[in-house]
Image (cartoon, rainbow, N blue to C red; front, side):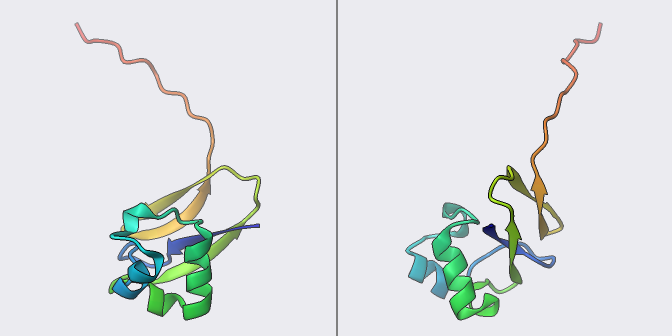
Length: 94
């Protein structure tokens, strides 16, 4: 199983200054959500200590063979399985 960190409530994903320092990062964007260091930090320190001011972190487990992405609404996130998509070609209007 793969573990992925998400924001479980509205407010969005962010890390505390302490967590950024421990992970050697400048900001949240430099980190993959399934990074084993992040998961270990959340599991050892707890989501409250690792999350930023307005973030409520959680770990979601999914099967290893699933292609996934993080979807969100107003900062509350969930893991969604990737699917194929097709779009119509853009046709110029006359």
